[in-house]
Amino acid sequence: MATELKAPMPGKVTQILVNAGDQVNQDDEVIILEAMKMEMPICAPCSGTIQEIKTKEGESVEGDAVLALIDG
Image (cartoon, rainbow, N blue to C red):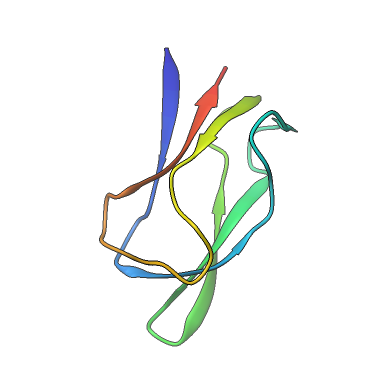
């Protein structure tokens, strides 16, 4: 079962640092979210393979939106 990487708050996706199929370790930065005029790194909650990116750069997302799936 894949682990969901979720936005902690509403914001705008400014950078996606990985691609589907990439290996990540726990606490690796995956996505940069801009919220309240600050850049916030969204880190992998577990080690595994990026199964799917469910957002794109420049997209505004709501809090708790699923940004990526990690198969770990």
